[in-house]
Length: 305
Ligand code: NAD
Image (cartoon, rainbow, N blue to C red; front, side, top):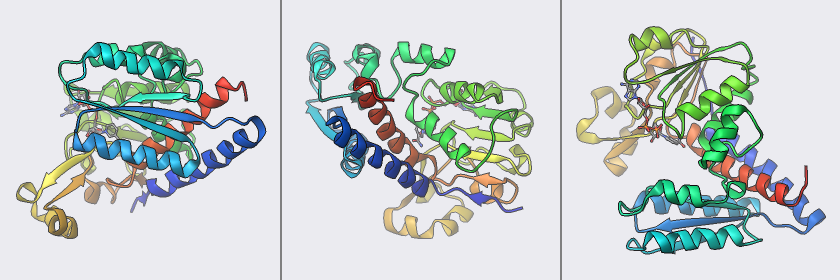
């Protein structure tokens, strides 16, 4: 069997178009433009790229976005003031603080200061609590993107055996709850799971969110399973295997490195039913779901269903 390779970019484009038409409707019917406030502290190059991508996506769908760039040495109190200003602005419906923050800042304190009603990343403890009880709330973007990927393949989650490798607060645990609310039977694995390949092989839906390059081989996969690869790992040319050097020849020549997931793509595609690539799988969905959450927030403020 050769897996269907899921095109995350085109799914994300579909979602953006859906958001765009709803944003236009909200504007024309209620005169409301959804607004996203992004706080970026310091000069972390990866954070700058993420923030730029989010601003671009906002522009594309017609969401107003404002990036507040703050100096790396900003005090915790000043940062809290900036969050509070956004909390009180009527034109801003979604707030996110780009992580990681500098070491002298208590990230938890900052995330908890974001109004739960504007917490479009879904990291506030009130929203985490609502996620666990299954109440309507903002669901974190990567986990909800994963659910969209599965559903948009026409796969019914109800009754399926789902195995998640990784128990982080931003991916593993929230995606487990979302799958549970969709009536899957859910197992969460982690670094101390005994006989990981055996447990993983039970899965109709296998999600790898670990951060270990090519960990999941064909031995982990039940024939025909849908395999979602969340991992993003950069491999330098000098660390690459012969197989990877051949497969990603262009990337190594251009950049001297390549991105791979937690799944051994070349092996697993021979056995899985569906498989997300890295890059171009889960990643693009994360930003699309942020757009969806910001729209949802504006609609809630406007009391539109
Ligand atoms: P994390 O480091 O917070 O959590 C990793 C989890 O993997 C932990 O729960 C740990 O117990 C488990 N783990 C570690 N080694 C293991 C092993 N050998 N076997 C089984 N489990 C093991 O990571 P995270 O924030 O959840 O991110 C996971 C990966 O997903 C990273 O590569 C990250 O870059 C990527 N990521 C991608 C997106 C996206 O938009 N595509 C978003 C978030 C994270």
